[in-house]
Image 1 (cartoon, rainbow, N blue to C red):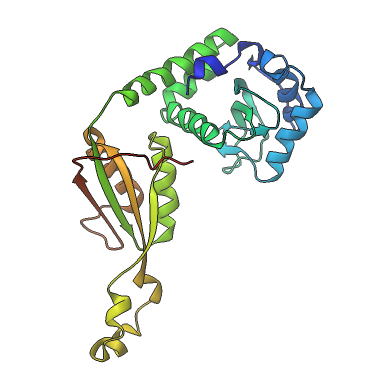
Image 2 (spheres, rainbow, N blue to C red):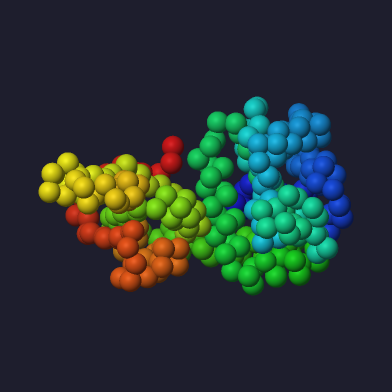
Length: 274
């Protein structure tokens, strides 16, 4: 996804100055239609599209960041723009903090995978606090876009280099880990994985009379697991394992999860989200 082509400086603003969330959404709609990418759409069209998405769940992700987005019927190309407010605006963020940086993503109704790619690129760009500080320090729309695109393009260039891949298998007995790991994958630009319902041997030895009574005292949930299959760049194996262990804890000292990787001699196709 080429972020340079979809961002529009005409819709960006430094210092939006709004207090209530509904006021913010109306101002975002007004800024959105300044872009040629939304010719034929009214402020009201865009406002109601963003509002409908917000009613499904707030896009205020926390850490002073909100990413309102909507899939719009009849739209042919994506529009991405950035708005900042150093004082912050109420946005129903998960951590209850005001949103100081707002990214708006609007795009074709059918382009689900592209929406996810843009979300992932924004998430990766903001993974370092220095980027957030630079965005808030920008006093003009040109500077705002320059900071954002510089950081996303650097990361994209590194990730687009042809790399040798490995297959990673992650077995999890705790569902709480699963969603955090998938979120981590998206932040790292890993765009697809396959998740398999699996079982530990406890489910089967419980049918053996010798062990049946003992196994009955065990928590049955411990017999069921999820196995994640994912392709990762070989040169990022250590970093990815370390990132997963930030979620699970040191796997050499804890039970409930295991990681293994293996070399791949050949592969065709993709596990990317469709």
